[in-house]
Amino acid sequence: MIEAGRVTVNGDLATLGDKVGANDRIELDGVPVLQDPDLVHYLLHKPRDVVSTASDPQGRSTVVDLVPSETRVFPVGRLDTDSEGLIVLTNDGDLTHKMTHPSFGIPKEYLAHVEGLPTRSALRQLREGVELEDGFTAPAEVSMPQEGVLKLVIHEGRNRQVRRMCALVGHPVIRLVRVRIGPVSDKGLAAGRWRTLTMEEVRSLYAAAIN
Image (tube, rainbow, N blue to C red; front, side, top):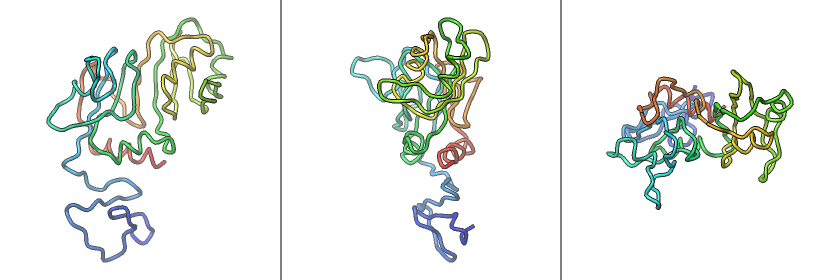
């Protein structure tokens, strides 16, 4: 693996005979081999009307208020205040960068309860991309698992993107829930509850950003 250039130490390609210490960061195919014990990764089911920031000047409840306070963490990306669902909070700056930078395009899956019954034409428009005020959206995976509910998988992170997409095709969103971030999901995690991501889940998020 080292000879194939798949291993790095502190960002540099490893060579046979390299010595590493406890504080060195070793990665295989861009994914950390060992987990830094000082890093924490929480998965939270954000309830509606909770703000996706570390603090709020208006005094509203934030996602940070809902997880342990022993270590300072920050939300990865955003989830609209009037939306709900999964969000990651961490002090892992490298993972945050990989999950939020547009070049990595980690997929996020949403269930959108919408007004009316979308037609095949509306679904096709959403799949192919629609023109919003800030440009065309990238192609998305869109299906309708039940009447009035759309399942959308997008690889972008524009502000209120799913709501704007659905409104543009004539079906405003009534309720929006994020149910998956990359390979990570948890149907059993109730609104307002959190859990620690497993090491395997953290590695899978790194891998999703690379792929």
